[in-house]
Every structure is written in structure tokens, then in C-alpha cells.
Picture 1 (cartoon, helix red, strand yellow):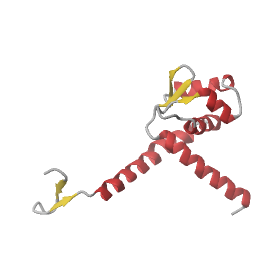
Picture 2: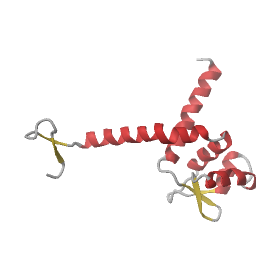
Picture 3: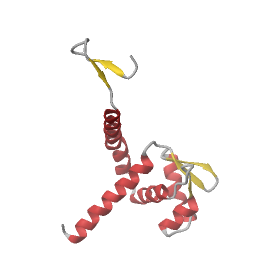
Picture 4: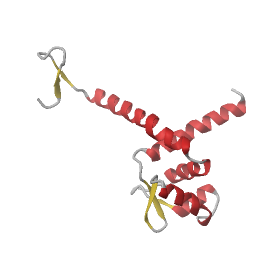
Length: 132
């Protein structure tokens, strides 16, 4: 039957999966993926590469592409000075350069995670400054 599962303990009982249960399961799966895959990945990156990814995530257009010039502008530098950082991220399969002057994320959910991680890091830094 579509949309219902048999109860493993009692085959006569059935359970219809609700939209709420699907949303909760999805949120739990994404959280687990972030903690087990994305967080360790970011923890291994140098700070300059993390900053690049955060600014890149802020520059994504509707096609999920970011202009390298826009990323450089947000970082307050030139695109030429970011060549090594961009190359390292490409070499490690974290981002790709599908068009001249544009980059994209290769790892699912990473763009959203780096924004979230940056927000948490900012909050922690503010708390440290205020000695909270």
C-alpha cells in the first residue's frame, strides 16, 4: 500500500507516514550529515579557505554559481590573490569552476552549512569578546 508501512511487531497494524514525520526525519538526516561529514571537512580546512567558502555561499546566484570577482570583493581583495585558495578548494573537490570566473559547490548542503557555521562562529566570538 502506498504511503503506509506494516508494523514490524504486529503485522496487522499499519502506520501511515505523515508529512510532519517526513519533515522531522529529513531534518534529522541533514543534521547527522552535517555533523558527520560537513563539520569534519570544514574543521580540516585552513581559515582562509573557510572564509572563501562563506563568502562564496553569500554570492551564489539562482543557478547556484558565484562570480569569483564578487567573492574577492566580499573578502576585500583581488581575484588574483585568491587564485591559490580557489585552486586548493578545486583540487580537493570541494568546489568546481564550471565557467570562466565562476565557481560552484560540489558537496551537497555545504553552501548552507558554511553560512550556518559562520553564524555560530560569529555568535561565539561575540560572546567571547563580551566575556559571556
